[in-house]
Image (cartoon, rainbow, N blue to C red; front, side, top):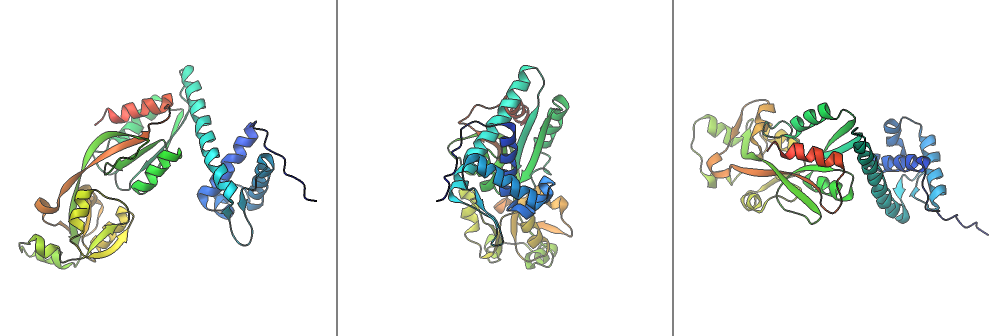
Length: 306
C-alpha cells in the first residue's frame, strides 16, 4: 500500500525559502542543467534540493530525468504561490529596513531593448542617483518585449517596467517618462538607400512597395495602420533584429531614431515627414498592491526626471 504524502503544515523556515528560490531559479533557467551555473552547484545537488522541497510541501513539483524537465500541474500552481511569497518576503525586508533608516533590498526592472541608449530616458540617471543615496539596495535590469515586461510586473517577477504606452492593462499603474522619436529606415544596398543617396525624391506610394520588418507583439493602432500597407518581410521581437535587417539592406524597418548612432554603414531615414512619429514611454508598476518604501522612493526619483 502506497504511503500517503505528508500534508504541508503551512509554516515556512529560512531553509524553505532558500529551497523555493532554488526551484524558481530552475524554472527561470529552463531546467537543472542550465541552472547549475546560476546556482553554483551540481545538477545532483539541485535535484536533491528540489526533492527536499517536494517532501516539505507534500507535492510533486516537476518531472526531471532523461525525458527532460517539466512542471506538473500542481507545480504550476505552487510556482504562482511561491512567486507571491518571495515577493512579499522581499517587500517585508525592505520595509523593515526602512524603519531603521537603512534601505536594504532589491528592485527588479524590465525594459524594452535599445531604450537605455536614448538620452531622453531618465532610467540610468535615476539608478545612479538612487544607488548613491541607498547603496544597500540592489537594482537588476532585464530586457524583453512589452508583453513579457507587462507579465513580469503583473506576476511580481518585476517591480518596474519601461514600455511604450500603446495600451493600458488593468492592475498596472502607468507613469509617463518621455517621448521617443521613431522613424522608418533603410540601409546597405537596399534600392531605396541607393535612390536617396542619388538624390531621388521618393513618394509614399513608392516606399509602400518595399518589404518591411514587422514586430511579433502588439503595437499602437496608428503604427499598425501604417504598417498594414507594407508587404511583410519578416517578423521579429527585438529591436536589434530590426537593425540587423535594415543595416544589411534586406528590408525597411521602424525603430527609434537614436539607434542609428549604434549602426555601421550609411543609414537613411525614409520620408520622416510621412513616416516619423513619437512614442510615449512609461514606467509601469502594480496598482493592486502596496508598494515597498524602496519602490516608492525609486519611482518618485525616476518620474521626477521627466
